[in-house]
Amino acid sequence: MSELIISVSGLRGVVGASLTPEAALRYVAAFAQELATPGPIVLTRDGRTTGRMIADLVRGALCAAGRDVIDADIAATPTTGVLVRRYQAAGGVQVSASHNPPEYNGLKLFDPAGQVLTAAAGQPILHRYRQFAQFAAERPAWVGYQRVGRVVACADTVSDHLGLVAATVDVERIRACGFTVLLDANHGAGSLLGRHLLESLGCRVVLIGGEPDGRFAHRPEPTAENLVGIAPLVRQHGAIAGFCQDPDADRLAVIDETGHYLGEEYTLALCLDHVLRTRRGPVASNCATSRLSADVAARHGSECFRAAVGEANVVAEMRARHAVFGGEGNGGPIDPRVGYVRDSFVGMAVILDALAERQIRLSDWVRSLPRYAIRKTTVPVAAAGLQAALDALRRRFPEASVDRLDGLRLDWPDRCLLVRASNTEPIVRLIVEAPEAADAEQLRDDAAATLASFTS
Image (cartoon, rainbow, N blue to C red; front, side, top):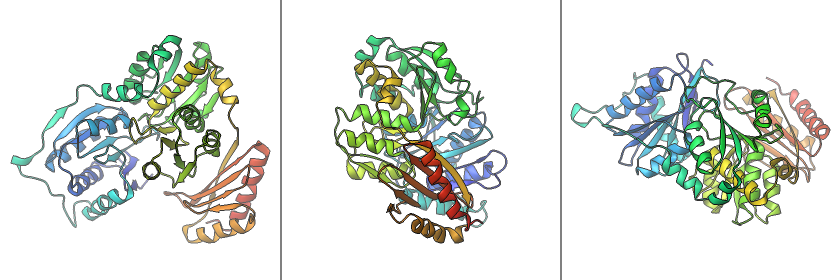
Protein backbone atom coordinates (compact mmCIF):
# COMPACT_ATOMS: atom_id res chain seq x y z
CA MET A 1 0.00 0.00 0.00
CA SER A 2 1.18 3.50 -0.79
CA GLU A 3 -0.47 4.97 2.30
CA LEU A 4 -0.32 4.15 5.98
CA ILE A 5 -3.37 2.69 7.67
CA ILE A 6 -3.72 5.14 10.56
CA SER A 7 -6.24 5.16 13.39
CA VAL A 8 -6.57 6.65 16.85
CA SER A 9 -5.07 3.50 18.40
CA GLY A 10 -2.29 2.67 16.00
CA LEU A 11 -0.84 2.63 12.52
CA ARG A 12 0.17 -0.05 10.06
CA GLY A 13 1.99 -0.14 6.75
CA VAL A 14 4.58 -1.76 4.51
CA VAL A 15 8.05 -1.40 6.00
CA GLY A 16 10.26 0.81 3.87
CA ALA A 17 7.34 2.01 1.78
CA SER A 18 4.41 3.49 3.69
CA LEU A 19 5.88 2.67 7.12
CA THR A 20 9.15 4.58 7.29
CA PRO A 21 11.41 5.34 10.27
CA GLU A 22 10.19 8.95 10.10
CA ALA A 23 6.54 7.88 10.38
CA ALA A 24 7.24 5.58 13.33
CA LEU A 25 9.25 8.26 15.16
CA ARG A 26 6.61 10.88 14.53
CA TYR A 27 3.80 8.65 15.81
CA VAL A 28 5.66 7.62 18.97
CA ALA A 29 6.68 11.22 19.62
CA ALA A 30 3.04 12.27 19.37
CA PHE A 31 2.06 9.52 21.81
CA ALA A 32 4.75 10.53 24.33
CA GLN A 33 3.95 14.22 24.02
CA GLU A 34 0.20 13.77 24.57
CA LEU A 35 0.50 11.40 27.54
CA ALA A 36 -0.67 13.11 30.70
CA THR A 37 0.05 10.17 33.01
CA PRO A 38 3.54 9.97 34.54
CA GLY A 39 5.48 6.73 34.48
CA PRO A 40 7.32 4.40 32.12
CA ILE A 41 6.11 2.96 28.81
CA VAL A 42 6.00 -0.79 28.16
CA LEU A 43 7.45 -1.77 24.78
CA THR A 44 6.81 -5.15 23.11
CA ARG A 45 6.89 -6.67 19.63
CA ASP A 46 5.30 -9.67 17.92
CA GLY A 47 8.45 -11.32 16.51
CA ARG A 48 8.31 -10.08 12.91
CA THR A 49 11.66 -9.84 11.15
CA THR A 50 11.39 -6.03 11.10
CA GLY A 51 10.22 -5.83 14.70
CA ARG A 52 13.59 -5.33 16.36
CA MET A 53 14.45 -2.46 14.01
CA ILE A 54 11.17 -0.67 14.65
CA ALA A 55 11.31 -1.39 18.39
CA ASP A 56 14.76 0.20 18.48
CA LEU A 57 13.32 3.33 16.85
CA VAL A 58 10.40 3.40 19.28
CA ARG A 59 12.60 2.87 22.32
CA GLY A 60 14.92 5.68 21.25
CA ALA A 61 12.05 8.06 20.55
CA LEU A 62 10.45 7.39 23.93
CA CYS A 63 13.73 7.95 25.75
CA ALA A 64 14.36 11.12 23.74
CA ALA A 65 10.94 12.32 24.84
CA GLY A 66 11.94 11.78 28.48
CA ARG A 67 10.09 8.52 29.10
CA ASP A 68 11.57 5.48 30.80
CA VAL A 69 11.02 2.28 28.80
CA ILE A 70 10.30 -1.21 30.07
CA ASP A 71 11.49 -3.35 27.17
CA ALA A 72 9.73 -6.71 27.19
CA ASP A 73 10.95 -7.62 23.69
CA ILE A 74 8.72 -10.34 22.16
CA ALA A 75 5.32 -10.62 23.83
CA ALA A 76 1.70 -11.08 22.77
CA THR A 77 -0.64 -8.12 22.53
CA PRO A 78 -2.77 -9.23 25.53
CA THR A 79 0.44 -9.77 27.50
CA THR A 80 1.36 -6.16 26.78
CA GLY A 81 -1.83 -5.04 28.51
CA VAL A 82 -1.02 -7.20 31.53
CA LEU A 83 2.51 -5.76 31.73
CA VAL A 84 1.24 -2.17 31.57
CA ARG A 85 -0.86 -2.85 34.65
CA ARG A 86 1.89 -4.82 36.41
CA TYR A 87 4.37 -1.95 36.11
CA GLN A 88 1.74 0.74 36.66
CA ALA A 89 2.98 2.20 33.40
CA ALA A 90 1.69 5.31 31.67
CA GLY A 91 0.94 3.22 28.60
CA GLY A 92 2.34 0.73 26.16
CA VAL A 93 3.49 0.36 22.56
CA GLN A 94 3.20 -2.96 20.76
CA VAL A 95 5.17 -3.26 17.51
CA SER A 96 2.87 -5.46 15.45
CA ALA A 97 0.93 -5.64 12.21
CA SER A 98 -1.45 -8.22 13.65
CA HIS A 99 -2.51 -10.66 10.90
CA ASN A 100 -1.04 -8.72 7.96
CA PRO A 101 1.57 -10.32 5.64
CA PRO A 102 5.28 -10.21 6.57
CA GLU A 103 6.08 -7.03 4.65
CA TYR A 104 3.86 -5.11 7.08
CA ASN A 105 4.51 -3.85 10.56
CA GLY A 106 2.91 -1.26 12.79
CA LEU A 107 2.36 0.26 16.20
CA LYS A 108 -0.49 -0.33 18.63
CA LEU A 109 -0.98 1.99 21.59
CA PHE A 110 -2.17 1.12 25.11
CA ASP A 111 -3.53 3.35 27.86
CA PRO A 112 -2.61 3.17 31.59
CA ALA A 113 -5.43 0.64 32.16
CA GLY A 114 -3.68 -1.79 29.81
CA GLN A 115 -6.22 -1.62 27.02
CA VAL A 116 -6.06 -0.39 23.44
CA LEU A 117 -6.63 3.35 23.22
CA THR A 118 -10.18 4.59 22.80
CA ALA A 119 -11.11 7.13 20.15
CA ALA A 120 -11.38 9.87 22.76
CA ALA A 121 -7.89 9.15 24.11
CA GLY A 122 -6.34 8.58 20.71
CA GLN A 123 -7.68 11.55 18.80
CA PRO A 124 -5.26 14.11 20.30
CA ILE A 125 -2.36 11.78 19.51
CA LEU A 126 -3.52 11.41 15.93
CA HIS A 127 -3.91 15.18 15.63
CA ARG A 128 -0.41 15.75 17.03
CA TYR A 129 1.04 13.15 14.67
CA ARG A 130 -0.41 14.97 11.69
CA GLN A 131 0.82 18.30 12.99
CA PHE A 132 4.39 17.06 13.01
CA ALA A 133 4.13 16.56 9.22
CA GLN A 134 7.54 15.01 8.71
CA PHE A 135 9.01 17.29 11.40
CA ALA A 136 8.39 20.38 9.24
CA ALA A 137 5.54 22.49 10.63
CA GLU A 138 5.96 21.41 14.25
CA ARG A 139 8.70 19.35 15.83
CA PRO A 140 8.54 16.77 18.65
CA ALA A 141 9.59 18.02 22.09
CA TRP A 142 12.83 16.09 22.65
CA VAL A 143 14.42 16.52 26.09
CA GLY A 144 17.97 17.47 27.07
CA TYR A 145 20.57 14.90 28.01
CA GLN A 146 19.83 15.20 31.74
CA ARG A 147 16.24 14.02 31.26
CA VAL A 148 16.64 11.26 28.68
CA GLY A 149 14.66 8.18 29.69
CA ARG A 150 16.21 4.95 30.92
CA VAL A 151 15.62 1.44 29.58
CA VAL A 152 14.84 -1.49 31.87
CA ALA A 153 14.56 -5.03 30.51
CA CYS A 154 11.58 -7.14 31.56
CA ALA A 155 13.02 -10.55 32.39
CA ASP A 156 9.71 -12.42 32.83
CA THR A 157 6.91 -11.59 30.43
CA VAL A 158 4.70 -14.66 30.91
CA SER A 159 4.15 -15.41 34.62
CA ASP A 160 1.64 -12.68 35.46
CA HIS A 161 -0.45 -13.31 32.36
CA LEU A 162 -0.36 -17.07 32.84
CA GLY A 163 -1.49 -16.70 36.45
CA LEU A 164 -4.44 -14.51 35.50
CA VAL A 165 -5.62 -16.94 32.81
CA ALA A 166 -5.14 -20.01 35.02
CA ALA A 167 -7.20 -18.42 37.80
CA THR A 168 -10.27 -18.40 35.54
CA VAL A 169 -10.40 -22.19 34.99
CA ASP A 170 -10.17 -25.42 36.98
CA VAL A 171 -6.50 -26.24 36.43
CA GLU A 172 -6.53 -29.58 38.24
CA ARG A 173 -9.58 -30.77 36.30
CA ILE A 174 -7.84 -29.99 33.01
CA ARG A 175 -4.55 -31.54 34.15
CA ALA A 176 -6.32 -34.77 35.06
CA CYS A 177 -7.38 -35.23 31.43
CA GLY A 178 -3.87 -35.23 29.99
CA PHE A 179 -5.00 -33.67 26.73
CA THR A 180 -2.88 -33.63 23.60
CA VAL A 181 -3.20 -30.22 21.97
CA LEU A 182 -1.74 -28.77 18.78
CA LEU A 183 -0.68 -25.12 18.91
CA ASP A 184 0.10 -23.32 15.67
CA ALA A 185 1.84 -20.10 16.69
CA ASN A 186 3.16 -19.66 13.12
CA HIS A 187 6.42 -18.10 14.31
CA GLY A 188 4.61 -15.30 16.12
CA ALA A 189 4.62 -14.11 19.71
CA GLY A 190 1.99 -16.59 20.91
CA SER A 191 4.36 -19.52 21.33
CA LEU A 192 6.08 -18.00 24.38
CA LEU A 193 3.09 -17.95 26.71
CA GLY A 194 1.16 -20.55 24.70
CA ARG A 195 3.58 -23.37 25.42
CA HIS A 196 3.88 -22.44 29.11
CA LEU A 197 0.12 -22.17 29.54
CA LEU A 198 -0.75 -25.46 27.85
CA GLU A 199 2.02 -27.36 29.66
CA SER A 200 0.91 -25.87 32.98
CA LEU A 201 -2.54 -27.29 32.20
CA GLY A 202 -1.02 -30.75 31.85
CA CYS A 203 -1.24 -30.89 28.07
CA ARG A 204 1.10 -32.68 25.71
CA VAL A 205 1.83 -29.85 23.29
CA VAL A 206 2.46 -30.32 19.59
CA LEU A 207 3.96 -26.92 18.79
CA ILE A 208 4.07 -25.69 15.19
CA GLY A 209 6.03 -22.54 14.41
CA GLY A 210 7.36 -22.21 17.94
CA GLU A 211 10.31 -19.94 17.14
CA PRO A 212 8.99 -16.33 17.29
CA ASP A 213 11.13 -15.07 14.41
CA GLY A 214 8.35 -13.83 12.11
CA ARG A 215 9.23 -16.27 9.34
CA PHE A 216 5.61 -17.31 8.83
CA ALA A 217 5.12 -20.84 7.48
CA HIS A 218 1.75 -19.80 6.04
CA ARG A 219 -0.15 -16.55 5.60
CA PRO A 220 -0.58 -15.17 9.10
CA GLU A 221 -4.35 -14.63 9.30
CA PRO A 222 -5.80 -17.84 10.82
CA THR A 223 -8.45 -18.49 8.15
CA ALA A 224 -9.51 -21.83 6.68
CA GLU A 225 -7.58 -21.33 3.44
CA ASN A 226 -4.40 -20.38 5.30
CA LEU A 227 -4.58 -23.40 7.62
CA VAL A 228 -5.07 -26.18 5.05
CA GLY A 229 -1.68 -27.58 5.98
CA ILE A 230 -2.32 -27.37 9.72
CA ALA A 231 -5.78 -28.96 9.96
CA PRO A 232 -4.70 -32.53 9.04
CA LEU A 233 -1.95 -32.40 11.66
CA VAL A 234 -4.50 -32.17 14.47
CA ARG A 235 -5.95 -35.57 13.63
CA GLN A 236 -2.52 -36.99 12.74
CA HIS A 237 -1.17 -36.22 16.22
CA GLY A 238 -4.32 -37.37 18.01
CA ALA A 239 -4.94 -33.90 19.42
CA ILE A 240 -8.28 -33.04 20.98
CA ALA A 241 -8.07 -29.57 19.41
CA GLY A 242 -5.89 -27.39 17.25
CA PHE A 243 -5.36 -23.80 18.43
CA CYS A 244 -4.16 -21.38 15.74
CA GLN A 245 -3.00 -17.86 16.59
CA ASP A 246 -2.28 -14.75 14.60
CA PRO A 247 1.23 -13.23 15.02
CA ASP A 248 0.42 -11.06 18.05
CA ALA A 249 -1.80 -13.75 19.62
CA ASP A 250 -4.92 -11.68 20.26
CA ARG A 251 -6.95 -13.88 17.89
CA LEU A 252 -7.62 -17.60 18.00
CA ALA A 253 -9.06 -19.98 15.40
CA VAL A 254 -9.97 -23.53 16.42
CA ILE A 255 -9.75 -26.88 14.63
CA ASP A 256 -11.64 -29.86 16.08
CA GLU A 257 -10.23 -33.33 16.72
CA THR A 258 -11.29 -34.57 13.25
CA GLY A 259 -9.23 -31.86 11.53
CA HIS A 260 -12.28 -29.73 10.71
CA TYR A 261 -11.69 -25.97 10.81
CA LEU A 262 -14.32 -24.38 13.04
CA GLY A 263 -13.29 -20.82 12.38
CA GLU A 264 -12.77 -17.71 14.41
CA GLU A 265 -16.48 -17.02 14.98
CA TYR A 266 -16.75 -20.18 17.06
CA THR A 267 -14.01 -19.08 19.45
CA LEU A 268 -16.18 -16.47 21.18
CA ALA A 269 -19.34 -18.60 20.97
CA LEU A 270 -17.64 -21.58 22.63
CA CYS A 271 -16.23 -19.38 25.37
CA LEU A 272 -19.64 -17.85 26.06
CA ASP A 273 -21.31 -21.25 26.15
CA HIS A 274 -18.94 -22.36 28.89
CA VAL A 275 -18.45 -19.17 30.90
CA LEU A 276 -22.15 -18.32 31.10
CA ARG A 277 -22.95 -21.66 32.71
CA THR A 278 -21.48 -20.39 35.96
CA ARG A 279 -21.10 -16.61 35.51
CA ARG A 280 -24.44 -15.14 34.53
CA GLY A 281 -24.53 -11.59 33.30
CA PRO A 282 -24.47 -9.43 30.18
CA VAL A 283 -21.92 -9.88 27.41
CA ALA A 284 -20.82 -7.67 24.52
CA SER A 285 -19.49 -8.09 20.99
CA ASN A 286 -19.26 -5.94 17.89
CA CYS A 287 -22.01 -5.67 15.28
CA ALA A 288 -19.99 -7.70 12.76
CA THR A 289 -19.80 -10.71 15.08
CA SER A 290 -21.95 -13.70 14.13
CA ARG A 291 -25.40 -13.87 15.68
CA LEU A 292 -24.24 -17.28 16.89
CA SER A 293 -22.73 -15.60 19.97
CA ALA A 294 -25.95 -13.72 20.75
CA ASP A 295 -27.93 -16.96 20.37
CA VAL A 296 -25.60 -18.76 22.77
CA ALA A 297 -25.90 -15.93 25.29
CA ALA A 298 -29.70 -16.06 25.03
CA ARG A 299 -29.65 -19.79 25.78
CA HIS A 300 -28.10 -18.92 29.13
CA GLY A 301 -30.49 -16.06 29.83
CA SER A 302 -27.88 -13.38 29.12
CA GLU A 303 -28.21 -10.35 26.88
CA CYS A 304 -25.59 -9.70 24.23
CA PHE A 305 -25.01 -6.00 23.62
CA ARG A 306 -23.58 -4.78 20.32
CA ALA A 307 -20.83 -2.22 19.82
CA ALA A 308 -19.38 -0.64 16.72
CA VAL A 309 -16.56 -2.59 15.09
CA GLY A 310 -13.25 -2.14 16.89
CA GLU A 311 -11.78 -3.65 20.05
CA ALA A 312 -11.90 -0.36 21.95
CA ASN A 313 -15.62 -0.02 21.18
CA VAL A 314 -16.35 -3.50 22.49
CA VAL A 315 -14.35 -2.81 25.65
CA ALA A 316 -16.24 0.43 26.22
CA GLU A 317 -19.54 -1.43 25.88
CA MET A 318 -18.35 -4.16 28.24
CA ARG A 319 -17.40 -1.61 30.87
CA ALA A 320 -20.66 0.30 30.48
CA ARG A 321 -22.75 -2.89 30.82
CA HIS A 322 -20.53 -4.51 33.49
CA ALA A 323 -20.23 -7.45 31.12
CA VAL A 324 -18.89 -10.74 32.45
CA PHE A 325 -17.37 -11.59 29.07
CA GLY A 326 -17.11 -10.25 25.56
CA GLY A 327 -15.07 -10.12 22.42
CA GLU A 328 -15.14 -10.02 18.66
CA GLY A 329 -16.05 -12.69 16.12
CA ASN A 330 -12.57 -12.54 14.60
CA GLY A 331 -11.40 -14.97 17.26
CA GLY A 332 -10.86 -12.45 20.03
CA PRO A 333 -12.39 -13.34 23.42
CA ILE A 334 -12.10 -10.78 26.22
CA ASP A 335 -12.32 -11.81 29.88
CA PRO A 336 -12.32 -8.80 32.25
CA ARG A 337 -10.70 -10.93 34.95
CA VAL A 338 -7.59 -11.22 32.76
CA GLY A 339 -7.70 -7.88 30.97
CA TYR A 340 -9.69 -5.78 28.53
CA VAL A 341 -7.74 -7.00 25.51
CA ARG A 342 -8.59 -9.73 22.99
CA ASP A 343 -6.78 -12.80 24.23
CA SER A 344 -6.12 -16.12 22.46
CA PHE A 345 -4.83 -17.65 25.71
CA VAL A 346 -8.17 -17.02 27.40
CA GLY A 347 -9.86 -18.84 24.52
CA MET A 348 -7.59 -21.88 24.79
CA ALA A 349 -8.00 -22.19 28.55
CA VAL A 350 -11.80 -21.83 28.49
CA ILE A 351 -12.23 -24.40 25.73
CA LEU A 352 -10.01 -26.92 27.53
CA ASP A 353 -11.89 -26.30 30.78
CA ALA A 354 -15.20 -26.99 29.04
CA LEU A 355 -13.95 -30.21 27.43
CA ALA A 356 -12.59 -31.39 30.78
CA GLU A 357 -15.82 -30.63 32.61
CA ARG A 358 -18.21 -32.07 30.03
CA GLN A 359 -16.03 -35.01 28.97
CA ILE A 360 -17.11 -34.64 25.35
CA ARG A 361 -15.35 -34.24 22.03
CA LEU A 362 -15.02 -30.76 20.59
CA SER A 363 -16.90 -31.74 17.43
CA ASP A 364 -19.87 -32.97 19.50
CA TRP A 365 -19.91 -29.76 21.50
CA VAL A 366 -19.97 -27.67 18.34
CA ARG A 367 -22.86 -29.68 16.92
CA SER A 368 -24.92 -28.73 19.98
CA LEU A 369 -24.65 -25.01 19.11
CA PRO A 370 -26.73 -23.03 16.61
CA ARG A 371 -25.26 -23.00 13.12
CA TYR A 372 -25.27 -20.36 10.41
CA ALA A 373 -23.91 -20.16 6.90
CA ILE A 374 -21.83 -16.99 6.53
CA ARG A 375 -21.20 -15.40 3.15
CA LYS A 376 -19.19 -12.27 2.42
CA THR A 377 -18.48 -10.04 -0.54
CA THR A 378 -17.42 -6.48 -1.41
CA VAL A 379 -18.97 -3.90 -3.73
CA PRO A 380 -17.15 -0.77 -4.98
CA VAL A 381 -19.06 2.24 -3.66
CA ALA A 382 -17.55 5.72 -3.44
CA ALA A 383 -17.90 7.62 -0.16
CA ALA A 384 -20.10 10.24 -1.84
CA GLY A 385 -22.68 7.63 -2.77
CA LEU A 386 -22.57 5.55 0.39
CA GLN A 387 -25.56 7.04 2.19
CA ALA A 388 -27.78 6.75 -0.88
CA ALA A 389 -26.64 3.15 -1.33
CA LEU A 390 -27.54 2.25 2.26
CA ASP A 391 -30.92 3.98 1.95
CA ALA A 392 -31.63 1.97 -1.20
CA LEU A 393 -30.76 -1.23 0.60
CA ARG A 394 -33.07 -0.31 3.46
CA ARG A 395 -35.94 0.22 0.99
CA ARG A 396 -35.18 -3.10 -0.69
CA PHE A 397 -35.78 -4.97 2.59
CA PRO A 398 -38.48 -3.00 4.45
CA GLU A 399 -39.47 -5.97 6.63
CA ALA A 400 -36.09 -6.17 8.36
CA SER A 401 -35.25 -4.45 11.63
CA VAL A 402 -32.63 -1.73 11.26
CA ASP A 403 -29.48 -0.97 13.23
CA ARG A 404 -27.30 1.98 12.13
CA LEU A 405 -24.70 1.64 14.88
CA ASP A 406 -21.93 0.97 12.37
CA GLY A 407 -22.91 1.04 8.72
CA LEU A 408 -26.24 -0.72 8.18
CA ARG A 409 -27.34 -3.94 9.83
CA LEU A 410 -30.61 -5.59 8.82
CA ASP A 411 -32.02 -8.39 10.96
CA TRP A 412 -34.70 -10.98 10.35
CA PRO A 413 -35.77 -13.70 12.82
CA ASP A 414 -33.30 -16.20 11.34
CA ARG A 415 -30.81 -14.17 9.27
CA CYS A 416 -28.97 -10.88 9.09
CA LEU A 417 -27.08 -8.59 6.71
CA LEU A 418 -24.32 -6.16 7.66
CA VAL A 419 -23.01 -3.52 5.25
CA ARG A 420 -20.01 -1.42 6.30
CA ALA A 421 -17.74 0.96 4.46
CA SER A 422 -14.05 0.06 4.36
CA ASN A 423 -11.73 2.39 6.26
CA THR A 424 -9.04 2.12 3.59
CA GLU A 425 -10.75 1.51 0.23
CA PRO A 426 -13.77 2.91 -1.71
CA ILE A 427 -15.77 -0.27 -1.14
CA VAL A 428 -18.45 -1.60 1.16
CA ARG A 429 -18.21 -5.02 2.78
CA LEU A 430 -21.26 -7.28 3.00
CA ILE A 431 -21.61 -10.03 5.61
CA VAL A 432 -24.67 -12.28 5.43
CA GLU A 433 -25.81 -15.01 7.82
CA ALA A 434 -28.63 -17.50 7.32
CA PRO A 435 -29.38 -21.06 8.47
CA GLU A 436 -28.72 -22.49 5.00
CA ALA A 437 -25.95 -21.65 2.55
CA ALA A 438 -28.39 -21.14 -0.34
CA ASP A 439 -30.37 -18.60 1.67
CA ALA A 440 -27.22 -16.72 2.67
CA GLU A 441 -26.01 -16.62 -0.93
CA GLN A 442 -29.37 -15.39 -2.20
CA LEU A 443 -29.49 -12.56 0.35
CA ARG A 444 -25.89 -11.64 -0.40
CA ASP A 445 -26.53 -11.55 -4.16
CA ASP A 446 -29.75 -9.51 -3.76
CA ALA A 447 -27.99 -6.96 -1.57
CA ALA A 448 -24.98 -6.73 -3.89
CA ALA A 449 -27.26 -6.19 -6.88
CA THR A 450 -29.03 -3.34 -5.09
CA LEU A 451 -25.71 -1.67 -4.31
CA ALA A 452 -24.35 -2.21 -7.81
CA SER A 453 -26.09 0.90 -9.18
CA PHE A 454 -23.98 2.99 -6.79
CA THR A 455 -20.62 1.52 -7.82
CA SER A 456 -17.69 3.89 -7.90
